Image (tube, rainbow, N blue to C red; front, side, top):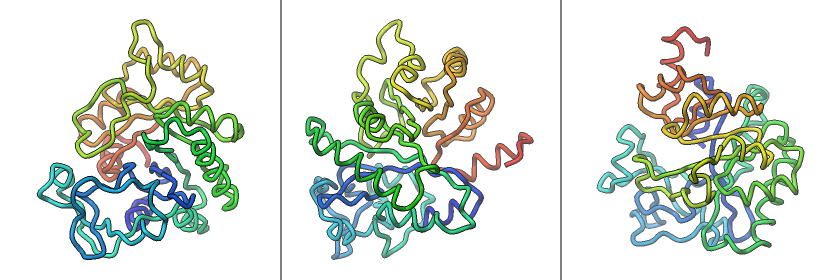
Length: 278
């Protein structure tokens, strides 16, 4: 929540974040389907070891017993973010915690790219996946936030369920055709939308046919012709995850609609240097 609060304080009006469902059906905001040892400390204050527990196997009160305020600098993942503040007492938030923050009048223009994340162990559990979508929908509606959110996923099957259950909410289709160099310590999503890397397949066309409003590819996997085709189909185009200044500049030059980055301040500065009003 400190991270969200800081991001909002510097004028960012679009937040992209990942959501899983706890064992007791509470949406929580965290990145991987397992708690990551390199970023998670137990009640004893030490980083957890071995394979972290699955988020979907834990009650929300168990999830909240962990501290995610520091990174273990001895791990590859911890070394990816050398500038991250090292804090204590930072808990994995519930979705409702963020919605409460965004309900403040000063944040009334802030919107959300809410990424529904898949647990590989539940991919064939149709009831679980239906419940995931319905609980997220109910949480957003209860907070009056449906007009400020789009649902965003690599899992096109989950997005199909969203289209079925929540036809009034826009959908964003994430794509990953190959492994990229920024995946250390993260779950791979390369196999969640099979067939997209086949010869002759137009990803923007597939997104449009699936009912998408937004196509969100990895920044290394988009070119001018794909962007033009997406525009012809009426799609907005966002790219992930663009962290290096030269890559941010390249995406601005290409003309994408949005940039997902771990370093919004870098994107702000480059946009301002190029004469864009933030």
